[in-house]
Figure 1: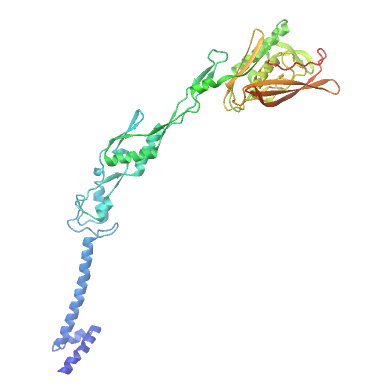
Figure 2: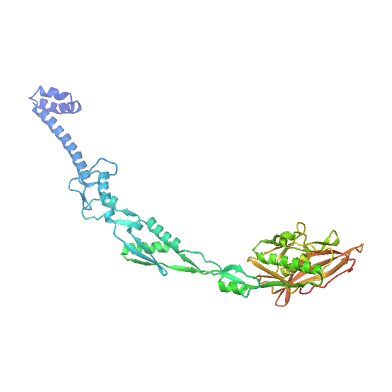
Length: 452
């Protein structure tokens, strides 16, 4: 009996290690002890399995389903007032999404910009919702909440800022009327306005969170650099010149007429923009054509005095040239006469031959320059108006009697312009040199420079 009982443990080991022995045990019902041991082992295995299953059930009841999974919410699960029992995460999210628009609070927000107002409503924004948080921890007590996204608030603020932001507008000359009592018409200056879009977005977000219905926008005035008043006071006479003609013969009458036609043409083309090059011939057109209003008069042709259409216009170009020098325009193209002229200081004349010789001047300032010129009672007048540089007060023209040519057939004259500030010379500039032939009828001619 002892021996039999002591054999049982060995049989237990055999039975546990080899399941095929179970069938053999059924053939020996008298071995109750062994069978009892076998039953006890099976019960232990079953208990372990049930423990795992129970733990899994516990976990499924306490962990929410994940997106894309087939797991479902337990019975009696209510999230934000919606029964999601037996629903997967995606199904439950679809149910809550259908109610998201209802969570958006009606809004009427007034944004004040100076004296103007803009209205924002709930439809002015896009929203994010706490749907994922609710589904992660579903509870009947949690409320579905809508919050305006930062990007949509920022976009609303930028839209308002762009509508009211404006650059300042400097005053400018709208029109120039030569010789009128009021020469200039002006485009009025306007201050600009700047809105900080980031600051406005922050204020809108605060209003949405607190329930306020008014936002006052902070604005900054951007003043115009050039006001109408400052432009009006700065538009001054830059430089002028007068020369004189005679009408004692028919030839001089025709020449004077030609001068008047040329000056009128230049007077009509009177604005020179910054950097622009002005051309005398470009204004007058072909002065060799009677169809352009010019008459026959004495001209210099092939080194000889002759009769030709347009004679006399060189005095018009010379008058404009001297006014331009005083107005500090840059000389681009200028040619002296073959013989010195009597109506202007030597070295300061400017001859014209349409198609060959021209007077060209450039405005090198930052603001437009305006020319007015005309002939009245045998007096030619030209003047330039604009904003004068603060670097000088006055420009004075001078010329120097140069040396005669070695063969005695001609001579040269140099000229310059001097700049004065507070009565002191601050700069000088050499002007184009002039070479003249000796006029057989007048000989060597030199006129000292003075204000023309």
